[in-house]
Image (cartoon, rainbow, N blue to C red; front, top):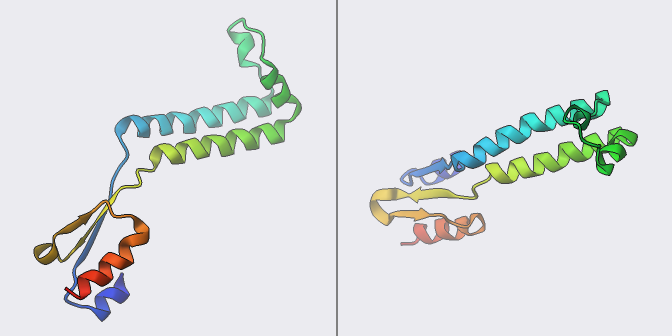
Length: 121
């Protein structure tokens, strides 16, 4: 961004990140805490299903037999879901807002094309 400002001082570039919807932020926060609790339960070997008077499912028994692999799976799968919840994919780019108007929700791969086109107008 600094290179563009030095090379083309009359171009003003503004950018902004968009937050995900509140429900998705809350889901991601819950998953983050739930992930750590679940990994802790797997490592300690505590059966949470016995607390509720239920029989442990076979996936829980498998996780107790393969603790390292189960912890890695919980960690990576929950991170994948958290990242999906927190990603909006939306942003706005404004080039010389007074002259050409904003370019909204631009595909990131097309940004160089829009930028180049705005230089020759």
